[in-house]
Amino acid sequence: MQSYSRYFPSDPAASGWGWRILDTGRQQIAPQAKYPDAEHPLSYLFDSDGRRSLDEFQIVFIEAGSGIFESEKIPKMQVSAGSVLLIFPGEWHRYHPTPNTGWREAWVGFRGADATRVMHQFFQSKRAVLQTQHPQEITGLFDRLLHWAHQEIAGRDQIAASHIPLILAFLKADQAELTQPHNSDAAIVQRAKAAMLQQLDKRSDLTALAQQLGCSYSRFRFAFKRETGHAPREFENHIKLNRSRDLLQHHHLSVSETADALGFNSVYYFSRAFKRAFGSSPTEWLKTHQQQSK
Image 1 (cartoon, rainbow, N blue to C red):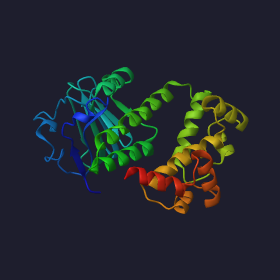
Image 2: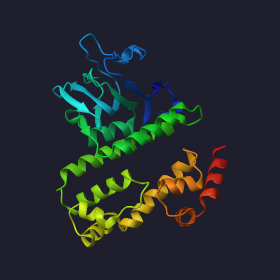
Image 3: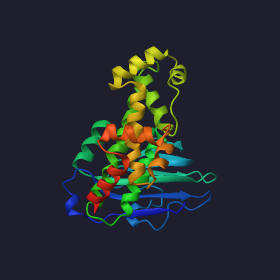
Image 4: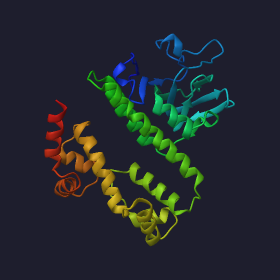
């Protein structure tokens, strides 16, 4: 994997957006390799004690491997794949991969009025190490954020920054799930949603899923309807159709490839469901969207 990082110059047009992206990247650190990469700006490097303090928020997602994290408010602890490190401005911290494993990390640094409000209202620096239950979704959001960070278009910074609150929303959902009784209706629905999101290429066996979650199908369906307003199959189709627009637009899959990637029985059924949801066929929607983007 090729490492990538970008540090954004000040953009007056983005100052009032509420979320301002400052830097982002992804890097693979091989076992025994030096860390961090000396190519980062000096203000981002760790000092002789292995510490640093930033004037921005950061989200650091450990996608693979393991390592160590320590901060002003958190004693030294081990982190591993799926761990998310939240960095708060003005607080010293240090982290690094374990020499015998290395790691792959993705990160984004940010500021802004809305960012500050959300970070202080919903997260705490004394609980700055989280274990996400949605690693595939977080990875996908970083994929898209980094895609837009590469682009040289008007509004690039705002488009890239829009992925930050989505990442934080998943982390907040993880926290809420941990505080719910494991067998409550809300917890069952949260776990069902996570299972659906992790296998969008398949049509879920809802009866089997209910059994895995430790409840009857009738309770599962009732809980799902009450918590989401949708029946389980309706909800699954909804998230698949939303994902299909991303596959068509950003991954450049054909209509048939998109239908197959999302586990639809046929292109006809996929196209009919797409048109019912969005008012036009996949081909028509993509053509209109491409024209509007020119």
